Length: 229
Image 1 (cartoon, one colour):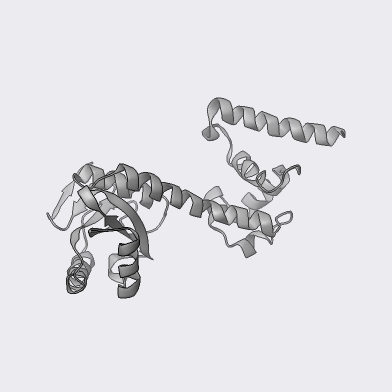
Image 2 (spheres, rainbow, N blue to C red):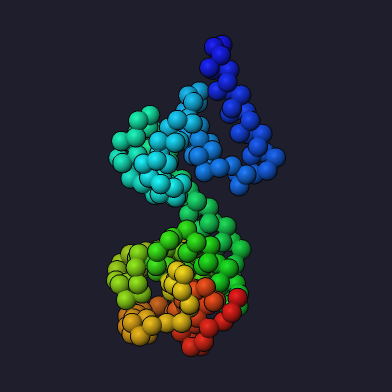
């Protein structure tokens, strides 16, 4: 084994030992990117590639959100590595869907907040999410409808019906976030809520509530009040 290969193996082992002892939070941003790259680079030194990725995209989250084609423009990043990186956010989302749907009910607004808040934490910008509710008022899953404001939601009747059947939903709940802002609705939010309620009613879909997640808690259109959580 060459001296370079020996140092490389030792570096990876030190990273693994650090993760085992202190968790991923103990790593620097470049070390986290290195660790991700090891999934597609079994024996190659990933430190240099990690630095190049951070230099090009600026942060870990921007690397994970990047298009695979853009990732492949960075020296050392091939198609397999680019696709592996791009799959990670989708895996995280599936993980949260599975975990949250089995854990949280919608019997209290604290439960509702605990279901939706981790979902919104994955997205830096405002977006609208549909929560599916099954028997015993338990969430069975969710679907992101749109990036943007509540007023931008367009209901596709066929797709909505398919989603409700797939999640065995008896009712739904609409939620959107106010990143870095209060949960109180704007005039546009009130108008959009009324229009959505009419559309869903004509489709025969039970809308339990429309909520907003903000820094100060959760706003319920049904109760017209902010619940601190």
